[in-house]
Image 1 (cartoon, rainbow, N blue to C red):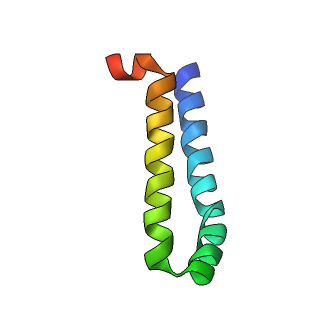
Image 2: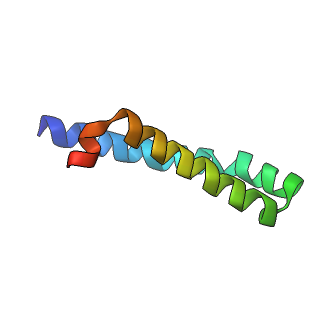
Image 3: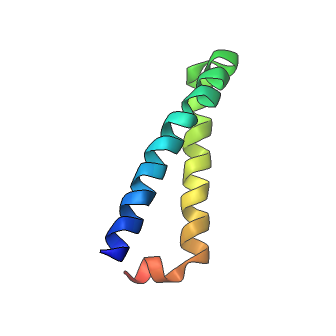
Length: 62
């Protein structure tokens, strides 16, 4: 039950951050236009994933 409570807390935190990041993305979308913004966000996401995979080898082994 200890681990379950921690995981549920992380889930709630994740949903809160997702809603919090809506405003900056919306502002950037208005400023840059969405056809320019979405590929940029995709590249940033891909870079973050590759960085995590490069630094956390145990994820690849799982």
